[in-house]
View 1 (cartoon, rainbow, N blue to C red):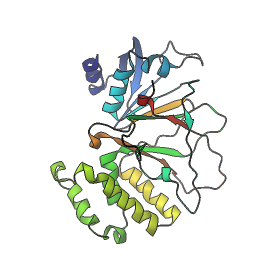
View 2: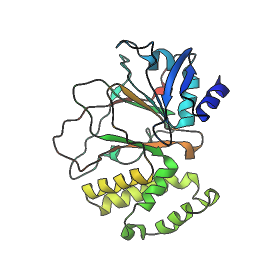
View 3: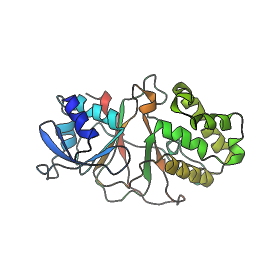
View 4: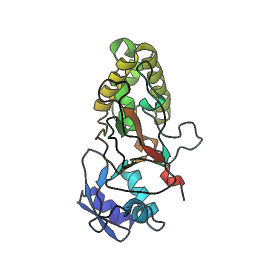
Length: 262
């Protein structure tokens, strides 16, 4: 089954056979796939993500697709699963929340979760805040390229950026990317005010070719959060596409670490 799925995805076919069902898929971005509700699953009670894709006999094959694609978006889901928890964290005019910086989930854990699933349940209020998702490699390079010149001159950041301009074999070691990213994040937090920092990260979203599609009700995004090849992992962040407005009503998100749940 694994080789068949790989062949189908690499050839960019418009259907995917998995768990005895045929799914319509589209590619709306340079990475990731979007899975739409199968024709036979049309009632509000039909939850094809949990009933089919995360079923015990299908689960690992589906998670391997998330590993391979980096991002799998499942549309039109209604779920009564109890394991989702609210996405927390507050942002203000004067200070960015930790979620506004690019990160892997479970960054403080000894082993990061393999997959993080973020979804927007059906609710009364739409969500205007984007979730930016991009490959780790692209994010680190984009953070360097988007720095104001006066910050890029700090220490060896320019020389690190120059390394990213060389062939991949000459790039900084993958094991150092977290340190590079952490240093850049601390610098922009210290040197830029909150809205300038948000504007900077919007530039990073663009430079990293991040997935920032608007949220739809009943949509789940499954993100490769811990690939065995660190360079293949994805990062994500809460992304304000325009300057933050106080007291703006926004729909809420829920999440879970899908691969770790039985």
